[in-house]
Image (tube, rainbow, N blue to C red):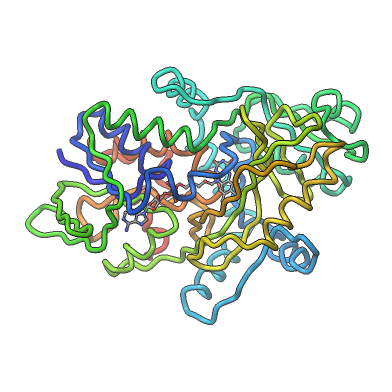
Length: 412
Ligand SMILES: Cc1cc2nc3c(=O)[nH]c(=O)nc-3n(C[C@H](O)[C@H](O)[C@H](O)COP(=O)(O)OP(=O)(O)OC[C@H]3O[C@@H](n4cnc5c(N)ncnc54)[C@H](O)[C@@H]3O)c2cc1C
C-alpha cells in the first residue's frame, strides 16, 4: 500500500516510521526542511505528568489577568473573523471540569507507552535522550500549589510515575542551579527529554535508510480523490497514493479547509533561546512555574522555551517576546544566565480549540487520516500517534485510546 504523509515534523515522521515498519510503501512530503517546523527548537520533553489540556477550569480568567503583566507568557492578537471566534468559543466550552478531566485521562492513555517507545527508538536509531527526570520550581506558594494540584490531577487520571514534593532547600539539593528564593517544587523522576532536532534528523535518516522517500521542498498545494486513489500536487511533482496522512502541524487546517472540512484550529507561537553561560547550569529538565518557561540542558547549551502567542500563522521572531522569555527565567537561577546565545527560534504549535490532538480518518474522505493538533505535547505523543496511525491505516482499526481524538468531535 502506497501511503503519502504530508509534513515531516515529529508527528509525520513518527507516523511514516510506524507505517514503513508495518510494510507500507511510504513517501513523506515536506514543504521546507524535514524537522524544520515546530518540532525543531522546542524543549523536547517526554512529559506525561504535565499533559493536562490547556483549556482548564478558570484558565480564561487567569489568562486575562496574566496578560497585563510585563513579560507575560501569553499574548493574544484578537482577530475579527469567524474562525478565531469559533476557536475561542470552543476553547471556553472545553474548559469545564468534566471535559478537562476527560481530556487529561485520554491524553495519558495515549502517552501510556511513551517512555518505552522512546527508549526503543533510542536503541534503534540513536537519540540524544536524557533520563534525569524533571524538576518543577516555584517562587511563590501559589505557583507551587498550582503545579502540585496539576500533578495530583494527573495521578488521579492514571499517571503512575514517582513524584516528590520538596521545599526550597530540598529542591536546591537536587537542582543546585536554583536561586535561594525558590520556595519549593516537584521532582518527577521518570520524565525524559530528547534533543528534538536530532530526533527528527534520526527519524528522517532511518526512513531513507529503509527505502522510504522523504521529499523536502515539496509543498502539497492540492489534494484530490478520484477512483479510489489520492492525487497530491506539490510544485512540479504529482504523486498518487492509496492513503494520505495529514500531519502538517499548524498548517493542517488550511489543507482540510480546501477539502471543505472546517475545524476550530489556531497556531500558538512559542519561542526558544539556546545558550551557554559561565555559571553552573541546570542539570535537569526544569519547569519554571510562574514564568511558564521550560529549560532543557543539552550536551552543548541550555534551551529556554515558552511563550504562547495567538498571532496566527506567523513564525517571525519578535525581539520583545524573546526578551520576555529570558527575563522571566532569570530570577529562578542562582547565577546561570544565557550569556552566549547560539540560536533563537520561533515555532507554531498546532492547537485545536479543545487542546487535544486530532487522530483518525476524516469522514467523507476515504483513506485520508489526520494526525495533527498536538499542541504543546507533540514530542511526548509522537511515537504513540505513529503506532495509532499505523493500525488505522494498515489494519483499519481505531484503538480505544484513540477514539477521543477523532475529528468527528468538531464536525457534529
Ligand atoms: C516553545 C515550544 C516548546 C515545546 N516543548 C515541547 C516539549 O517539551 N514536549 C512536547 O511534547 N512538545 C513540545 N512542544 C510542542 C511540539 O513542538 C509540537 O507539538 C510538535 O512539534 C508538533 O509536531 P508536528 O509534526 O505536528 O508539527 P511540525 O513540526 O510543525 O511539522 C509539520 C510540518 O508540516 C510541514 N507542512 C505544512 N504544510 C505543508 C504542506 N502543505 N505540504 C508539505 N508540508 C507541509 C511544515 O513545514 C512542518 O515541517 C513545544 C512547542 C513549542 C513552540
